[in-house]
Amino acid sequence: MKYLLVLIVVAVGAAWWRSQQAPAARSKSVPPRRTTPENMVACAHCGVHLPRSEALVQDGKFYCSAAHLPRSAPDAVPPR
Ligand SMILES: [Zn+2]
Image (cartoon, rainbow, N blue to C red; front, side):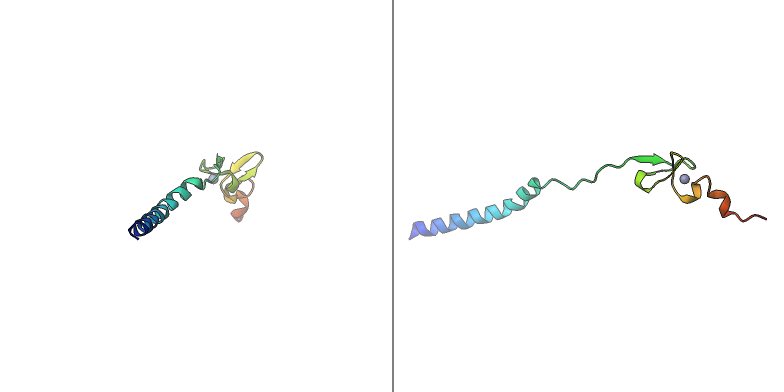
């Protein structure tokens, strides 16, 4: 009977130890989420850098916004 009690204590201890080790082992097996690096481009008008996916392209040049596109700028100002 004494050996059965020792066996139960050891089994509970081993189960507890495994439950403590499990989260660390799981986090090691799953690689951390990585976002793919994105190329940065400079605005041809003001020089600010922005991700290429957000840049506007005109004539092979990158622009940060529609206001910096060379053709759209004069339209914003009404003629007098
Ligand atoms: Zn710009």
